Length: 107
Length: 121
Image (cartoon, rainbow over the protein chains, first blue to last red):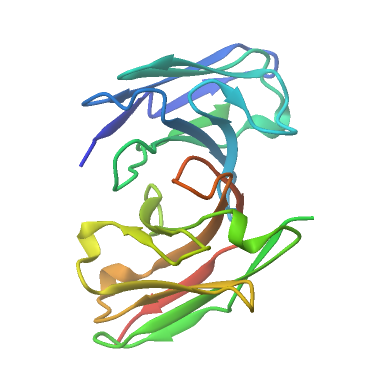
């Protein structure tokens, strides 16, 4: 199975901050990489697919980049509704594994 | 609007089976695949499998070996996930999610609200 590792596992930030989350795969996943946001008690919500494509109706402050084994999710200006857990998922080779998550908390 | 409505919470004893349904609306059922993903308390999501809704072909995680069965009923616009020989570590919220494509898994764009399955003696 492809292993997905996210860093950091948690971070504290303020509204308006720029936040970057990194996801690493232990082998190439090409650009088959999705990013999700999950709030407590809710299903994951797709933010980015294909490493860099913004899902419909997701604000443009979310940006995905990378290819191969290293990917980043950047939130350009953190908003109050963005405090949540973020997961990456490779969808290159089954089983389509998720990263361990990054919890974004209010400083 | 696209909706995926899952069946209600279930409690099972170890060794039993559970079947969760995912009824869809708001789009053409046979033009999008369906994923099943589960999430144990405090854990990362775990992908279980995917079904190509036009012909019923599936891709499944080998972790579940022959315990997992994913099916669909196109006339009912519903997908199903059945897990057998349940163990306590199968306790989780089970989600279905529509994929943006049909031909191969790519991006799960709409999700159900989840079905809590509790396995306890």
